[in-house]
Image (tube, rainbow, N blue to C red; front, side):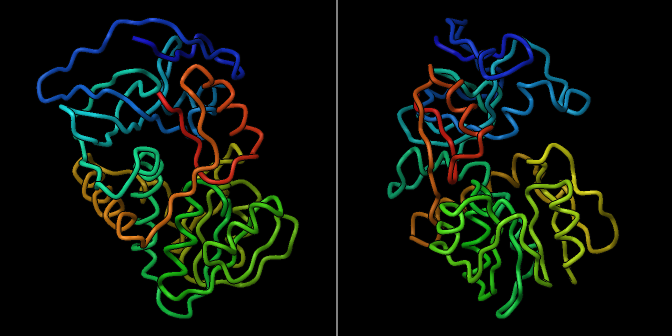
Length: 288
């Protein structure tokens, strides 16, 4: 079968498409014919060699942790290892509602549970002032929608006019760039980290959720108001439950996954280049 491998740490050019042995399901595992592979900014960071002390990746390896595909002829999504491939094995598969296309389901598989868990932990109520950094990313676009649906006044921070226009379309009441002064808010969702997260924390009065490191480092903040990465780390059972709820919400029209770029599997390097250029609105996916 075809698979994309990280042959060594480095830029997108280290991604190589080659023929590899098909994975064999172990006890309790299921084989999935992959149709769509989710692409994360974390995939690109790990490919570059960042985070080795935490994730332990050693080339050569097949990146990708989430896929949509077919299991025994049924459309499913699943968390996997080695998702940039024709086939992958999973311990838990989640059925996809008929109303959703595979690309939509794949776009929601990893960002959706995180967004739902964050929004519920924040216990947002009507009139809350909410800040979302990286508001045009795969997770940020969902947080903007969920916060707006709760009745919150959403301030979205994004890096370009197009990204800010998207945030307004998704329900934000105000948009800012990263050089703008931030208003005081009740709750902040920070997917950037670094100095951006630090500035957001300084303007947050109730809860600060630090879940992303798009800048390459976490926000240097601490205290009772801070909730970190643990809020978006789930057991397989919890992830499956959240995923089913998110897919159902999207199937009913209550949540819109934003898909900014799809590339065929053999163009995984182009997908990584786009992510690293920060030019993509919403999710990036590989169509297998």
